[in-house]
Amino acid sequence: MKSIKVILLLVVMMTMGFQAKADHDQVIPFNQMPEAAQAFLKQHFANKVPLVVTVDWDDYTIRYESGEKVEFDKQGKWKEIDCRSSLVPTELIPEEIKTNIASTFPGAMILKIDRNRRGYEVKLNNGLEVEYSPTFQVIDIDD
Image (cartoon, rainbow, N blue to C red; front, side, top):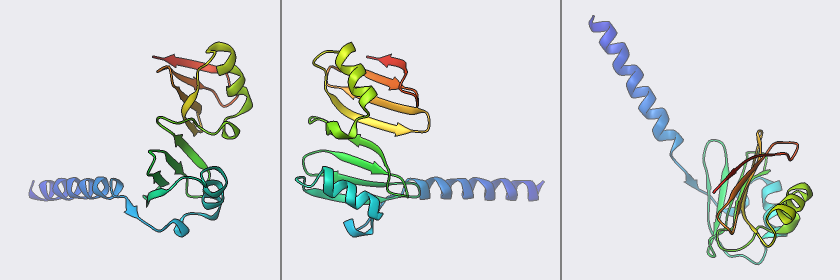
């Protein structure tokens, strides 16, 4: 019985340690980001002033003074672009999404775009969030 309690205690302690590790972001210099991420940011966000760059076990994040945030995977491919009150650069939005948004929500602009293996999710300035499959079919619209 004592050995079971000891094993359970160890499992709980290890689990708590992994959670603490997963929540830990480390601040790094810009030049420690993957080359692809650095090139991307220099091309699309060159006029923005970086505030902080962080890394955790599965991604890199850069935040700008003006409020924008861009997340990258370990290879330097963008995962999320959150421009909050400004607009996601149009050249970064897939053509199919731009066309769909323009025809379905005239005048709406994209403030945030997420990309993952399930597809894309965009947040519009009118408060709507539109989810797309990897083949750019609308799967969900949330308000």
